[in-house]
Length: 138
Image (cartoon, rainbow, N blue to C red):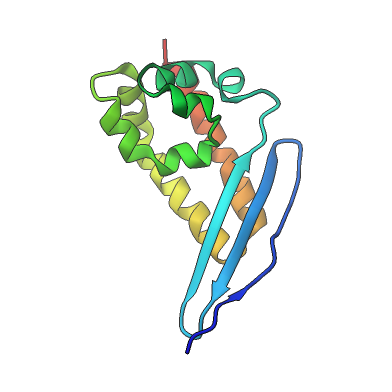
């Protein structure tokens, strides 16, 4: 019988970030990482990135109202590209999609390996990409 062992919650705060509910379940032969990363904005998503938030809200107001983290948005990139077909948002996201997917993948790997400081640094690169997206949207 495999009994999972849960490592307690890790929390790290900085002016820009807030780690919430990161844990690993360790089985005899497998390691699974479950993570939730919430970006702490001084303002909500619309205040920090008004153009992408407004574009997201046109088709799905509940998504923009939920104030998702950028990490969460990148995790839903394929769905966003599909739902926003024919929009300027899709075109801009598509130009940045490979970079965002790579950033997301590397962040996931760092979280799974408990390289949380490195993951935090990489999350800033997602913010930089969203700064570019913000500047490219009308």
